[in-house]
Length: 291
Image (tube, rainbow, N blue to C red):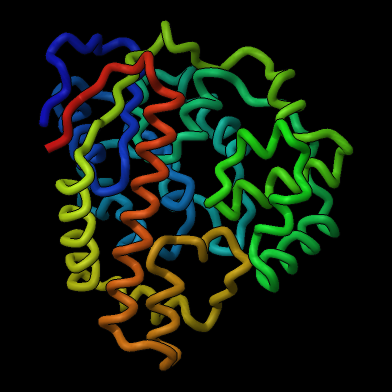
């Protein structure tokens, strides 16, 4: 798997791809060859505490090449696509060419298509939404969304559904209505070099399963053990795939083999949602075959 040879070293590069597809290795290869700073576009790699489980770059990787926006948010911090855009804006204007890599499709579309200026969610509404999701799941909030927003939001993603519900409760307008008033993007596609990795389902499933086993070998369970005293499923950082399963094992609720299988299945399901998003929202991006 290689990026095309005609990449302009002076223009930003965007590399999107599903989990375990090898996009981080491509970004490092490009940075080593042409220079630049590798910028994280993964919604969970921004948090500290989960270097192994979220497949953040290793300490050696970070020492070898410039990296930005990895692990810079506190464990209990709040973070959104709006926060990420504010963090990435100065990197776009910096001296080093950004190589933006990750699997959070919403980050890339907000960057290249713009993001609506939605007011922050009041803490009381956020607390009510958190309590509902934990007590009853997200189906009730999904059913209460306006019809246009309900057709746009990913119905299998509880965080996105909750966010849409919060916006509607806080502003009296549906998320779709806010999105339709979107301002110009920070980085229009014609100013960047966007690539999306295309991975076959079976090939990727094997990679995902093998990678989670390697995570266990390299300390993911110890990482979960370190985080057990501060575990709070309401926190965004605790949405890391595999984290709830390893915590359940450490609490004696399930065997390690069951935790392992649940985490691998959750990762495969997440990859399916990513691939669906990329196909729908990144049709104009250059496709690079993974594997």
